[in-house]
Length: 219
Image (cartoon, rainbow, N blue to C red; front, side, top):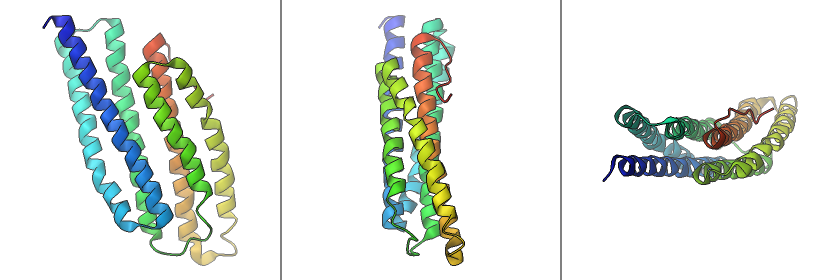
């Protein structure tokens, strides 16, 4: 196998590892939200335990990327691909951390009856998960247009976040005994908002990968 072919093969492997990591993070996020809605503490604990596998994958991606740089001395375009993969893997790891945080909030709430139907938070999560899926797909396809469409959804998540937290805080005066639950649900809203932010960061890295330009899509 030629040096170029060997490099391309390793780059494909690197991207495959990243896609696998992203799928695991996406599953963790979905499972964390299900655990919250159903107050399934065992599922929440499973999400927390599963994070070790995602952390391990990130480390393997980092090691392989750095080895590629050291061995192959890649040209600028190839170096950009490796750099983008490293940054995306870091963002995916943070996505998984948000799943863990949601699971921890679920455990903190426990089996206490929800103060309100948990409907709006999953709706916000639905948009955030769309952003996760689209940002990773955009990275895989090197699709700038898809990355831009994905990032535009962040504004909607931000609006929902602000409205939901304000609504939740309004429950405290009449429900002082449920303050812990209300605070934990507010935390969950924040974690969902952060999932959207990390997806936007991945979208920004797609643009960097394709164009070499650093663009702030949160503006």
